[in-house]
Length: 320
Image (cartoon, rainbow, N blue to C red):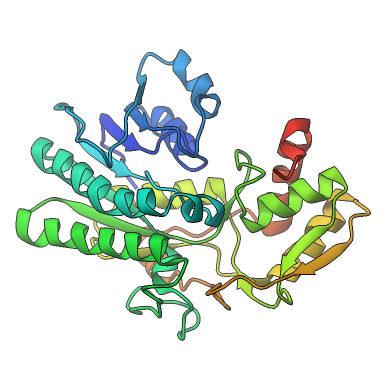
């Protein structure tokens, strides 16, 4: 798919997903302004990119105020706490990222005539009654549960993005991301892979919520980035699922991590999490047929790369 963007703004660009997105944009010849408030990220994630004169890092909270750029042809809105630990610690900030942050990012795209992409999430499907989840499924979300601060923030962000497209002629795209993992994750972020890898490498018990029968569909970060940018470059204007359609139970992921690390860590079960989705698996027919995208890195290889990255950083094995 052709790439024709010269200047991009990436909100949340120093995060786990934002940093490799910025790196890939630079690789494709696009200059990048990376905006981040560093609430859940770090300068270290993009330190190597600072050597590139086409990369600019700006400490900026897009949820608090607009960004006054003029020379932009692509706006990628990734800014939001995205892990349970973070959005439960910052519930109001998470809702503001989805509401005020999305509005400010859309206003930037409207003012400059840029294409706008919203990084949404499989969490808009809630605890789904449809399986696998297609883009035309409206979801099963508890609007007042503890996870609602993230789920509803993204659902509102999608509604606002669609409104700007329909009523203000902004050229928008929406991507729904599923269970991304890989190098660059924070060990204490509460996500399944980062938690299990950190615990295994530290020799601590690997803690599984509930009986571990709940499912996830882990998608390696490189595949996620390719998919996200395929949506950005494509002509499909409706939401697109980007994820790996290979469902695994959380217990299976824990057992695989234990095997690949060679740890003696036991797997222990802790209390189930309120409103945790029982099943999660994307239908990626649209991504395959319309964008020509599908994931390439299998789970074993992806976990090996992730484990190697954590193992090379001893401080990252602390579970936090």
